[in-house]
Image (cartoon, rainbow, N blue to C red; front, side, top):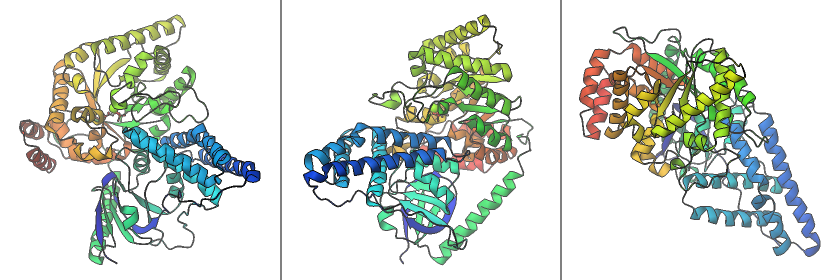
Length: 582
Ligand code: PEP
Ligand code: MG
């Protein structure tokens, strides 16, 4: 068996070694035959029953999700339920059976082909991803019609090595990912998908090595091929030589050893060699994640992405009420036992759509998103502000506002907060009168107009994910431009450094809560820029802490000043690597 290597996009770190388990490609290749007039209604019924069976299947999947399943999974299953209920899928094919007398499978595929063609004409990436969802739903219906079930890797009776399977597919639906979790798979590779595609998000939260955007993987890799996924590099090696295999096994064991060693740092305070304490906080999506944050030794929550309370609400096609939100915020505050919880107000839009919204934006990343949406829906925003304020009566909360770019947006937000406070005072509800309010710095315009933020707010938090997206004009979810996503671009570094410096001068705390904060490659660089507050996914916290323990701030500060003067990107990369080794 010839060995070959494929390159794609790394989405989840680590090394996985196992045998390929190929998922059968799209089952949309179906038999075609015509139905006699007298059997048409029976064929219609057959399709209706298959659709109903899939609805039940999805609902069962939703209901049986384990408690610790990533939140996104519920949202993904909901999307599939909604697609299935759409008349374009649930009714149009019935009409095709009635008018053209096609068999059920053929009618469904005809309709899907038509929809696909329409999707192809829209160049919008987000919608393109929805096309994959539609195909996945259609495949489920066809599987029921044809009686062929997806073949899952079975674990029973296989020895441990044999059971290490790597799933290879053209695309994987997040709902299917869940079933893989129950089985023996150790990583996954797909032909399509971007760094922030739904499946990639699930893989990251499951902590499974993965690479996507491998274009030909599912046609080049054969069933049972030995595969190595290098999730750090986004590389897949098929049928490696015994030497390469041994090297990767060694690297894998080394990573496990490092992980074990890092676990010993859980209770160690994050203090640099010269004695400066660095605040390490956690990013969470739901109050239940607080347990993970505490376990990793986080001293607070630096980013609670509250939009996850609004997404994936199953059949409840409405927004969470004030009380529902209050209960959730209170849960997080109580779970953190006196440590601060930074709640970010609803950051909806772009790749995080709300079920109840119509999405018509031509370019969602530049459209109605986050604070823009909240200010356009004052009642909804006021409800959230009241819920957060009420929870602040139970422990320390900070309020974080996403995507601010204009002074009037800050002023309107603060005015609405005052309105919420006045209402609660009137109702004699206790809340924190001194609640701190901060801004996400994630639009270049914000980083370039810091005085207007510093004058009005209590703290800043740099969202590097969006700051990079908007500075470099690349959509975070578009895999075709993923190679342009560069945290070390001189423009990005200048904006981050300026923000940290301006905060320091004004005596206003600045944190970083984007992915850069959790990437140990950048810890020393950020420290050198003056950053003293990091917030990241709990799984990254110990690796960052280790860097901090090995940091000498005066040295890093001097070296980083030099890096910020370098104009040549390749030289910056080299200098940051040297900095990391210091
Ligand atoms: C960011 O933009 O860096 C950020 C933390 O927010 P999100 O990733 O939720 O957009
Ligand atoms: Mg953001």
